[in-house]
Structure formats: C-alpha cells, structure tokens
Image 1 (cartoon, one colour):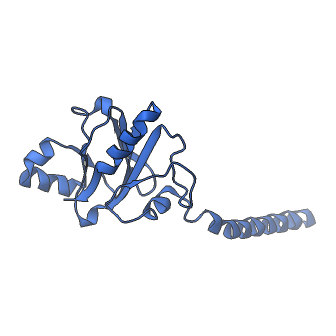
Image 2 (spheres, one colour):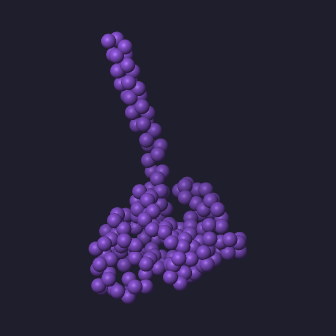
Image 3 (tube, helix red, strand yellow):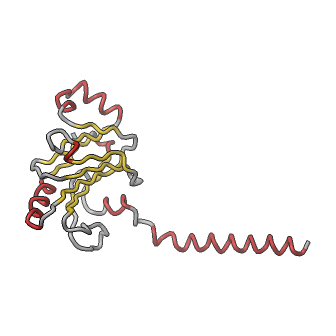
Length: 179
C-alpha cells in the first residue's frame, strides 16, 4: 500500500512540475508563429517585401536569390485580388490560412501565360463574383478558402545577381487588394 501511495504522489508531483514548466515557457513562443510575424510587418492587404538580412520581424530572405513578399488579408472585408503588373521569368505563389497551413501554391511554369492574377474568396464570394463579374473570374485563378483570415507569399527567383533588382521590382509591383 505504501508503494502505491508513493507512486501516486510521484506522478502527481511530476504532473504539477510539468504543467508549471509549460506555463512558464509558453510566453516565449507566443507571437513567434508565422501569422503573428506577418501581421506585424505592416498594414493589411498590402505586400511587404522582405529584407535580405536578419531583422526584428524574424522574416527575411535567407537566400539573396529568392526574394519574397507577404500580404495578409481578412475576407470579411471582401474578396482579395492578387496581381503583379511587371513580370519575371521565375516566381512562386503560396496561399496560407492563419494557422500557416498551405491551401494553394503555384509557380510561373504552371500559370496562365506566366501572369500573377489570383482571387482569394470564400464560397459565397465566388458565387457572387461569377454572377456579377464573370470576366474577372474567367481571367483569374480563383482560390476558394474556408477560413476568412490568411496570408499569401509571392517569391521571385533571381538566379543571377544582376536579376535581383528585377525580382524586387516585380514584388514591389504586386498588389493584394480588396475588390
């Protein structure tokens, strides 16, 4: 009987210590997720071109040949259209929910004419757009998402140092606007 009581007490004390440690360590990780970092870059519905060196945001281009920009959105305000006026030969696009789950990705090689033209929509929004603006829907790639909050990342690949300014110009031309 004594051994059973000692085993129960040891388990309870161990569980209490573990829970206290989790509570003490949790603040160190709060705010270090991708969503928190991206919303701290600046205003919503605007692409933010990432720096090429480490900085206080924790978001930067680790490889100078891959330039990146991020934009976060909330579909409660309306559908979001992502376009880039300028072109570059190599780009990738990813759409993510607020939990950093990738919901869509594409590259220049698999896009229509190499253009960046995406709509981020809910089911109700795409139905409304198909009836109100069928031309817009027909020339865009519609990405239907279930969560209203999320973010997109647009990357331009510059295989040569001479192409880095072109890649950054491409990202600077990109828009992430509410329709």
